Amino acid sequence: MTAEELLAAARAQRVVPLYYEPDAARARLAAEALALGGARVIEYTLRGKGAERVLARLVAAAPAGAVVGAGSVADAAAALLALDAGAAFVVGPNGDPAVAALCAERGVAYVPGTLTPSEMVTARSWGCPLIKLFPASAMGGPAYVRGVRGPLPDLQLMATGGVGPADVHDYLLAGAACVGMGSELVRPAWVRAGDGEALAVATREVLASAAATARKDA
Image (tube, rainbow, N blue to C red; front, side):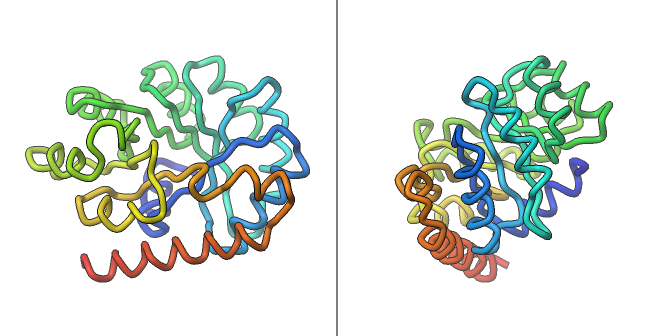
């Protein structure tokens, strides 16, 4: 998935679910439930040893119409593991020009993590049109997004970190291109219990709410 394709898909979906689950079967059930709820862009974070092997299985068994990318990719070594596993896109908690170069070479979208306006502009200069703001809630949430985009209105930000379903409306109205949502949506208790129905319903609801906000803001 190219950078432009990911930006378009993320802007259309408005909420990108992300999660980590070390058990491959439970991780696959979660991906299937997210897709059933309407998610077409799903982020699996590489937060544990051997997570790239789970990612490879998720990519191979991705639900029809859905793509699975890798999150928590902090350096080029981790990026290489993610890309070799078939990640459709790569997301970092930080920004790394070596990761940007590697992803560009492979033709795969990279979403670097940033905090300050200077970091955001630098990340964009690497050829990354979608930029992650992390941790969003700790920096002031929607007010920070609005403040940054005042002088830099062309920035396409994915606000991630402490974002819950009740926050989506405010982030989108503040100008975020989309939000990344972890355990507030993909609840670990649901994943451990294999409760795909609860996850699918919650996903459908949050995506519908985000779509309604997008229509009001059009």
